[in-house]
Image (cartoon, rainbow, N blue to C red; front, side):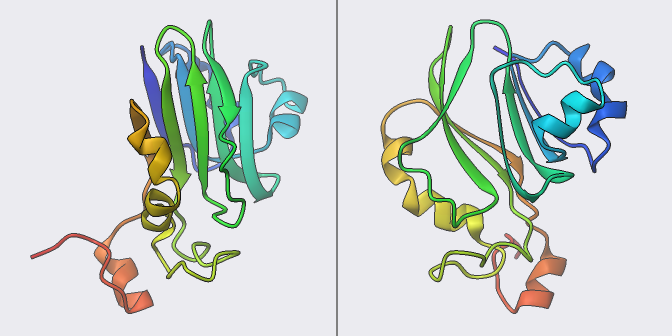
Length: 159
């Protein structure tokens, strides 16, 4: 199974062919336009695509190819805007936690979340999915010391 995760920094429609040449089974793309926008620009997205975001030109896209299928987990909490828990079925079955933890967006919708910790909050909130078997966390975690200085937190590992 080939899982590819990439922050495309928008304009996925102009970068689609090189990505597809890598033949992913599961594709996780941060900063991607929504499926309707991509399809309008000629991107042949598979039917098995999930997307979250508040800006139709910049969100989190997950696409499955071949025999793989995606289903949003029943425990999905939309308040964590940049974490999408999915159940993947096919030749390999697993829980997929797709993320683009944009530090400025982490607090939105979840009073328990601190800035720059949407992923950390999600790991607690979705613990039962991780405990259930195979699980993958894929995406752009945006964990960098420079974000700690802005937020007054210490979420990035350092000595």
